[in-house]
Length: 202
Image (cartoon, rainbow, N blue to C red; front, side, top):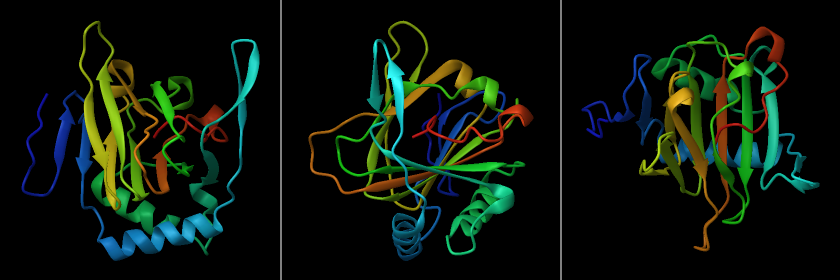
């Protein structure tokens, strides 16, 4: 594990054969990040979702939206965000999954992305906007300690496909007063799963 901050601003959190987990705390300037956040909060097609858990149906604790890369709306900044991600982690991304965390009670449990829906060997790239939130990253082995990363507005975090086999990630609830946050996750979907950009990443 290498937590060295490189001259480019890159922080490498996990190493593996596919570039691991990498984090750019200042991928875009604060004004651009704020402009993108405002546009997405106002204009994205936010939806609530529910899913079965044990013997009942529970609400997903955040709002969701999804867009295909070949049909990004012109009135949202997703194309500019995709161009930023392509500079840092080039890949044939097919979709953008958006998450709106309204307050500290919105969260995503520790998990890995659903591997059957992802193209093998391709990364996931996550752009964070709005208030910072803490992400936990933990190896899937007994006794492993979590790495905590406060995802800053305008930051980009990239996870390799291989890291989904070895690590879990999540955004825990917090009692601290926090403002709303939006994450935009660009993925390369497997051909049979191009419509499944929903809720896998933080």
